[in-house]
Image 1 (cartoon, rainbow, N blue to C red):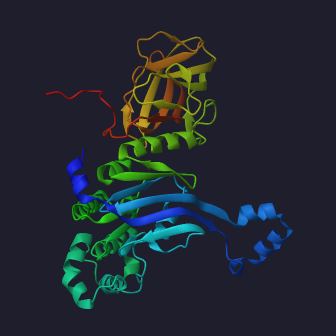
Image 2: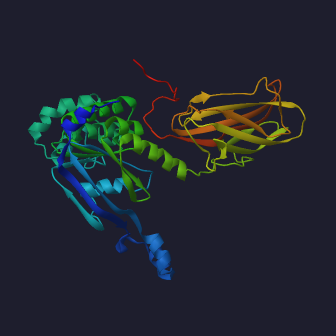
Image 3: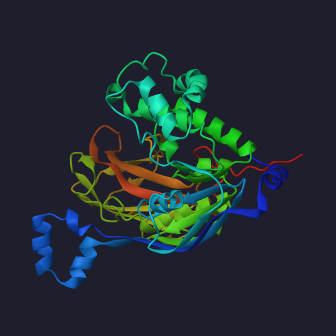
Length: 413
């Protein structure tokens, strides 16, 4: 959608490898000199096995790949998979425990923006301080100063001490300085996760410009839309190990499947009685169990693929024989109500299991919460209300879909 094959071929030089990662592993263990008396005492009486578990862990295991000159290379994975550790090893912040990393060109890491800032100095003083750390002369920084401040939108704050800046203001200032660094390779770790939408838009514009310049960028993010928009290839890391290198669309789909696979939080349940985050109602009818089916088969972790048939099956305990009305609300992670089907006009009884079926579910890949409410037939008395009680994960073969639903339409000439 965002780039043509011609543009990609002209920008990337596959004969020039600028980053080579070979069999890299990283093990973290605390320094003995930094242990407290309590830690030293308890570790003395612990078994070696227990001590190994408590005192160290493998953050990354046997990862290898190459990045070409001019490539926008993405790295994705769940939290704790080892992405940031890998980027810091490429930057030279960490040394691999095993394996090797070779780079060809000057690297500027956007890993911890603002490193080198002094909270007691003004914003203006910090611009020159940070610029010096990046290798700029004072004259160069003076020539760039107005542009840096304008990009960060901090014209009225530069004479204030940095400690009085918000975290968002500090990030904007640091990013505005860092993007002017003279570098061949840029390492970017979740810059888009901070700042408002206006700042993120500026980041996108900078990435687009750097991409056109043929700069090599290694990019870590949980934003699959950004991955699909900018990246040429994507490394997927799962539990410290490289799963493989894929196209952006493939990587997005795999990332969704990984989230569904490991997403077994307390709300991802079948038995909902008393476990809903927020529950109220008269109790004349109580929802006992919710079971999710996909394509007619039980979905253990409430996972359904986009375009498949979804069934939500419910059973109750009732103190009344009155007819009931059930309402469902499907919300995305931002709390936006995507759909709100209800059973008005349908003859439902609390004596039997009730199911809601939706053919070819159009929800795009992502996580959703389902609220379930049970009323009397006149929708006056609320018997049971379970707010966002069921977590539903939608996956897909491709992640290249935007918006909230897939219309399953077709283009034609």
